[in-house]
Image (tube, rainbow, N blue to C red; front, side, top):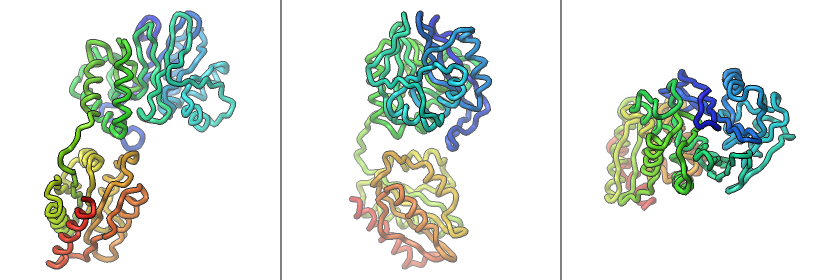
Length: 399
């Protein structure tokens, strides 16, 4: 059994073969599901549970950690199913287990385990739990990255359990950052994790860092990836989060033009739309991006960082192209409301691609430009002039 400190044990369930997490997030380096045991002189607390697909492995590790001892508390810093998938089985094995959770978490948990009779201790910011010679202090950390998230701090061990915060989908056999073999891969995974999970909540990230800064921490026990230690990745990861979440003021509006094009017709419209935006908004950064030629993760990040954007698609099988929907699947739904967006495209038979994309964006509360530019087959000179007028009108509407 691996110890963080003599009183804190880690239960790490490794999943090196994971390549997709939560349906859409790439996990090139696998992942781990970390939970913990805090051994007090009077009480024992489990910190989080594990993914339901690894129930047997989780209980085998838990048995090694506990022996014949029975846990008193289960602290859930977050109720996403990869943290709570074994809760129902834990309650069957330990029926007197009291669940410690935030108020939003208590509501979510009832629907996760489908029970209304849960014995929950609801805690708020600053509340504490006495385990005898160990204390657990709860720190509210909403939107990192669910509304229910909190941190749990053990001052006697200078250890904080940060849930998803500071973590990474990264799996190597060793548990600690000091033993990471492929450092460059870990750093890549850590940034990809931040971009996919934390970046929609930048103000909350900054709040979380401020709360951590007020504590004396030797270990950050994350839910995914290696445990972070003082003198190794702990300070570096905190610094990286500070840099990634910095509120950088842009001096020029960012208005990218995204498109895909089967035969060059939508591409021609995109070029002239881009020219119209530039003409009407010379103060803006306006560039063309062919969805086929760029990494979609990079384009999703650009889309979410933009002040406005235009999107062009052909119509195939009465719909927009799959790559367009793949781009839009990465929309930051938290911060996307009222984002100005214009939609355009060439079509051959019926032309449903543009209105379907516009309808979808409207359903996400975007500020969809009332004009839609649709051109049948190959754009004429008049069509190209209309595309430039379209771009100019869009720029004027958002200026």
